[in-house]
Structure formats: structure tokens, C-alpha cells
Length: 127
Image (tube, rainbow, N blue to C red; front, side, top):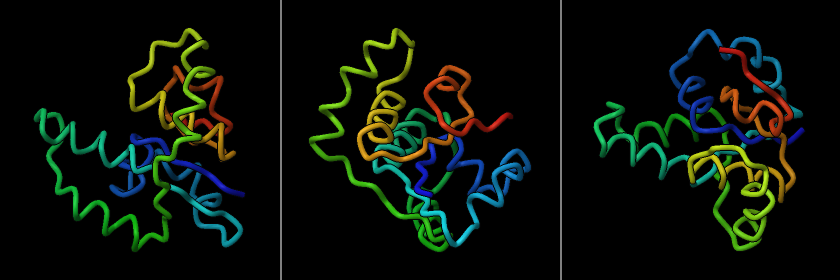
């Protein structure tokens, strides 16, 4: 299985949050490839810059690599999938829209804790 973590799930996974325990078997399975969007790093950097998150971006990226997560770059076909996400009528941030578009165009199973994405996420993490 190939999965894409949204930014909040990524942060929870790296912090060892107990909410991620329900996904532990999926995330640690040798048959699962876990992707992290480059958009998540941009989202995290924006949160740090805005004072909403106290973290070291480089340390987070290193922890993700050590966890075996694979970085997914932003590509043109991902941007091309944005209209279908935008037409959903969901009130999403630009970061959420882009990560959802990436998941749908790859395709990857999106793991999200955001209730707004529950209908579009193939795996939903209950907080």
C-alpha cells in the first residue's frame, strides 16, 4: 500500500502522538510506502514563521527520513488535479487542497485527521 500523510498526521507521527497508534500497523508494515508531500514542509515552515508552531524544520525532515518516509515532490500533474479538489465545495487551506490533489493524482491513500477531509481520505485518523 502507498499512503500520503497530511501535515497534521505527519507532525503527530513524528511526535509519537498516541492518536497515531491506530495507524501503527499500517505505517510500520514493510508493504507500506509512506510518502510526505513537499507541500507539508512548506506548510510547516509557514506555521513556524507565523509563530503557530515551535519546531526545527530541518530536524523534522531528518526524523521523517529516519522513519523511512519518502518525500513526494510537487509536480505539474498534481497542480492539474486541483480543479477536482476545488470543485468539492470543501473549505480547505491551499496546503490541504494541494496534498489532496497529490494523493488523488498519484494515486496514494491519504491519511488525514482533518474532519473536512474524511470523505476524501481513504484512511481517517480519529484524534
